[in-house]
Image (cartoon, chains in turn orange, purple):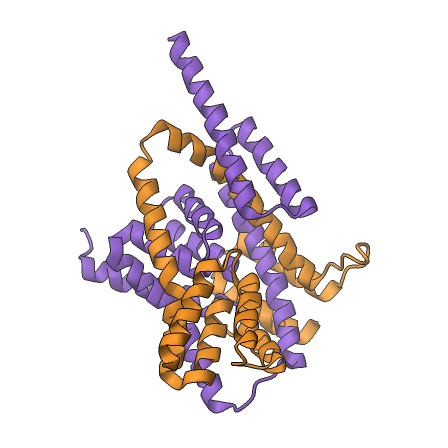
Length: 179
Length: 189
């Protein structure tokens, strides 16, 4: 039955999908086009829509593909499927960390893991910036529209009480005007 | 006065619904939102734990936004907390995409979408930069942590080293260094 197959395929995607949204999109594409469930052109449109609509990219893609293949319940099956492995794995990991937090060994590990995680997130911010105003092919060329938005967002987040959601929405509006 | 469990769960749901609705362009976008809403404003969990949640979310398979929602929900209110946060994060996507899929027969990316996405990326990069500096001040407390952070940054940016390798390396380095320091202190006592 198509709903069960959808659920199983997306559960598999949730289980092997390391690295977040963009890499999961690639896996979804491979799994679905191989099965002939969706064509490449339609998939690239789904990928574009998933990135600009609110919500995590992979959830957007799962919901959309699920609907195309199995209607409303198809989108439920795909979305629940992609989330189920997270449930099991993350709760196990959280239990482990909570249980052994008091242990000196785990605490020492966490003390090493925290700074590298923050560094990783910093590099992710740079990759975000890369997609908007820095071009690796021509590093000296800066696209001023997005750069101005970036600087404004830094100042707004650092020195004002403006809600983060509002900052992102205003950046979106500014993108329509300036980019 | 302590909040009742139901009120706490409802609050978690609403908070993560908001976070889900404004996670545009990838899971990391929710980091600044979580830091502000869950830690800074409501003091549900510490900044260290937000960093732990992200370390776990990124090293496990799955959608980062769902993973971090589940981790934080579980940490604050157990299994029920994990269910409501996951549900909250997913629901805005689900509603929006379903509406789009039902209303339009075919979808296609267009030039306005590209412009809006460019603006969002630039703005989000700025907001993440500020959040990173805040979290950094909390978790980088000594020279060793600073060296680890610089090293990890360089490795991910220039060599494209993956998050699992970076976290494993950081964990091992932390284990060796902080454990040895503790043993030394123990010996000198």
